[in-house]
Image (cartoon, rainbow, N blue to C red; front, top):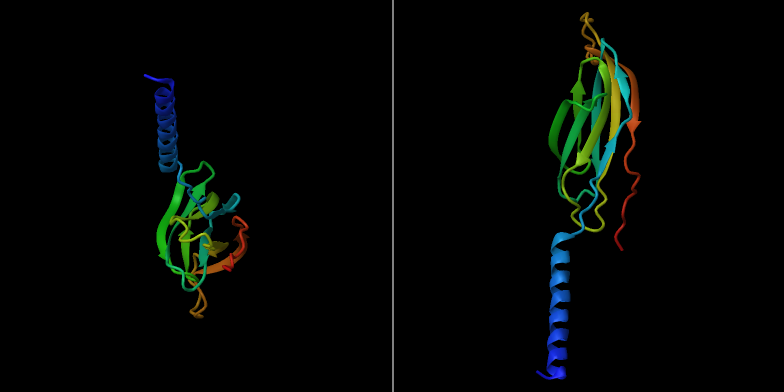
Length: 164
C-alpha cells in the first residue's frame, strides 16, 4: 500500500472519529436549564400556630401553565407537607401546616423553560397564624385564625426577560 493511500485512510478515519465523538457529546451533554425555585430560611411554628405558604407564578399572561412543587420540610429535612399543582401565570396557591416545629419552605417550577426568554418567577410569602381554640362570635372575617407574622421568601433574583 502506498504512503498516499495509507495517509488518506488515516485522515479519513481520524475525521470519522472526531465526527462520532461530536455526535456522542451532543447526545449526552444537552444543556438543561437550572430549576427555578425559592426557599425560606428556618422558621418556628408554636403549638398554637399554623403556617400558610403562599406562592404566585409571575410570568407573561400568554405563557403556558407550569407544574409547581411546594414543600415544607422540618429541621431534619423530612417532608411535612407537599403539593404539586399547575399554575397559570398570575395564579396563586397555598400549602398549609398546623403542627408545631421548625420548618423550611421550598417551591420549584418543574417544567423546563419554553424559550430562551422564559421569565417564570416565583413569589412566596409565609404567614404564621394563631389557631383559635375558642369559637368567637361570627364576624365574617376569618374567625378561626389571627395572623401573627408574615415574611416574604426570596428567589433566585432573576428579573424579567424582555425579548427584542
